Length: 152
View 1 (cartoon, rainbow, N blue to C red):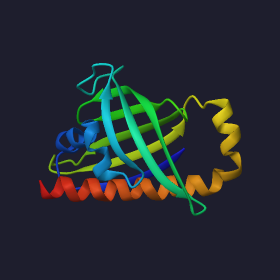
View 2 (cartoon, one colour):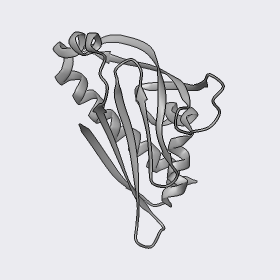
View 3 (cartoon, rainbow, N blue to C red):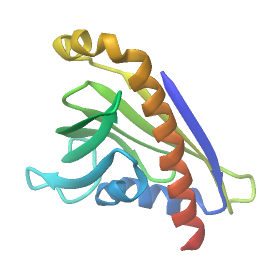
């Protein structure tokens, strides 16, 4: 499992609202540049689905793809998670409120919850490179989220 975390000077509910509005993900992520609800979904509830469009460079070679994700957990101010269809990765954001309620710590994790065997086998040669990219990207995502939450 990969993990990144950051402390944000904003209430956990407000930060959760930014993350759970999946149409914002393109603002935070260095890899995911666009997201949209699908299948009639309009809100972050378990079972709702959205599509994400991603792009990056792997060993200097441009790559672009899309995947449909399903929301697993939507507990305002506490946790938000979704599973990606293509890779089977589970992305989770946990929100831990500060004692005084004015700030929070956000912990982002990525784990292989239900990996697609073919994708897993094809990605093995690049495992170290992609894992480093994803972990660094998680920290960038949280830093951008922090900037947005604290300027609101």
